[in-house]
Length: 152
Image (tube, rainbow, N blue to C red; front, side, top):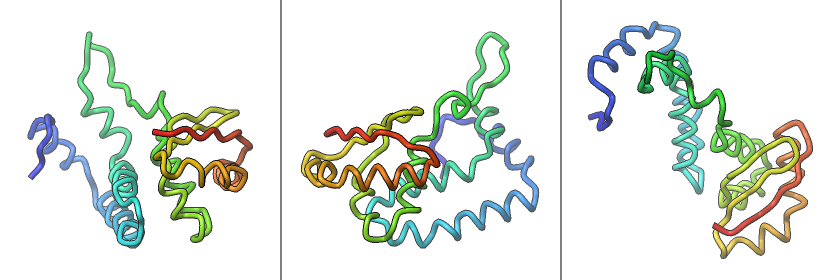
């Protein structure tokens, strides 16, 4: 059962707009994510990324409330999907680094720096391996950033 503020008629119109290729792509996305969800230490992040990947941007924009007769705008246009970016970073890292990386959350990202938030008990480990974390992040992003690590 869907427990959301989205009206049933909006969900029905969204469902009616889906075609077979869209449904097939969604099923493929779920199959790809299944193994990651089963083996991940931080499955909730992977689930969120999987669900975000299932929602087309048009559908997200059509579900947002409109004000003053303006056209709908998607939140993804102005704010980067930090959880999705971080999930991609963790996924592209070597298996030996994934456990540590899954303990962090990307809270800020711009052209020059990335800020990671970690629980205080992992702060020392991240600080000791900050150069490794920085290299992994640089490789995944495709450009160099300075990594700052802060306690949650």
